[in-house]
Length: 155
Image 1 (spheres, rainbow, N blue to C red):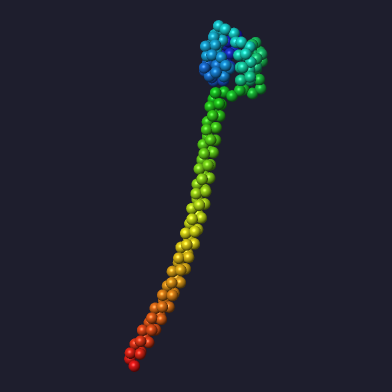
Image 2 (image 1 turned 90 degrees about the horizontal axis):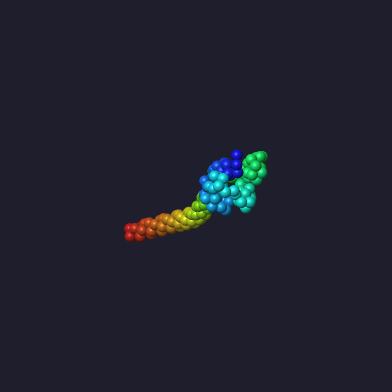
């Protein structure tokens, strides 16, 4: 197996098309295609970019010996897509949390207004009751006065 085949094997393992792969390692898509077809050999800069970007074992890439990756397998495009989706969901969660906080603030303000209106209502009820008592007293006085007038007229 030659370097072009291993080059393509890395790209396929990462689930990247030639354009995505070429953009990450700073070469043209055409260069990736030519390397995979063994038309040209990758430069040392390209080999270093692949190793640094995707944690590729250069010994494996050059000779086919050893593991394809050093340590853990690098992020695949699927993992990156999942990671991007997770970031979007985290952003959405933050936005929703802001909305919840705003709603809580609004509810607190409404509760304060409600308590104020409830107190005003209670004050009005007490004032109304006081006025009703005064009215009742005045009506009793009026009746007493009328009765007195009637008695005086009868005499």
